[in-house]
Image (cartoon, rainbow, N blue to C red; front, top):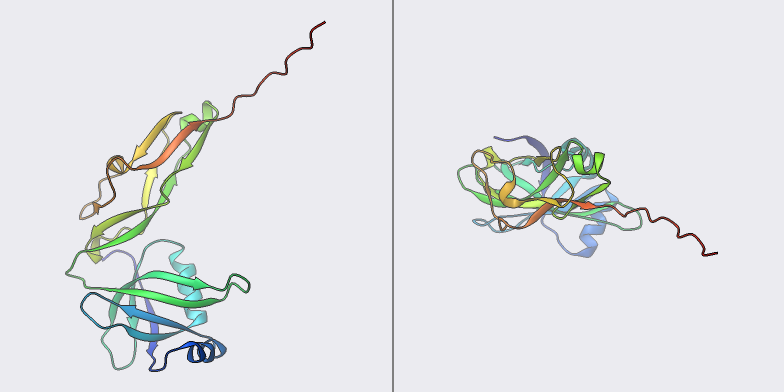
Length: 197
């Protein structure tokens, strides 16, 4: 399996705003686990444990094993996290259940490696058109991120989905012609025109 981490959760019966508020007062985050073959399961997650897990996975797509009393471990990935825009506290988390023997689709972040020749030598500017790409794979083949080496990329050149590195067991689902990373021309420095005598 690709990188994975474990998170302890508890199943909760109550739902609604007042129940969620009570959970947050107890430093718990309301969460939900949903999947293609099962009914959604309401969960509660310790906020400190959740924050630690997010720090550990550092933005990479990671398989998360959810452990709870009285239930088998569930394989999942983090689908969405809601945060309070003022306090920055975690408000809710959505987990997508997956099965080890079944392919699934997921957005995976794109990470740029190297400094392009276009930026270094030709006043180019790096533009990331797609910060993530959609892939289809088994849990064991899930890449934490798609690393793209831009060292040879010059001004007016683009890496598209079709030019991303081939990874065993991973199928890109976005259109092959979709731009991912480009080097565009930087602004030319204009000379100040001389005043006519």
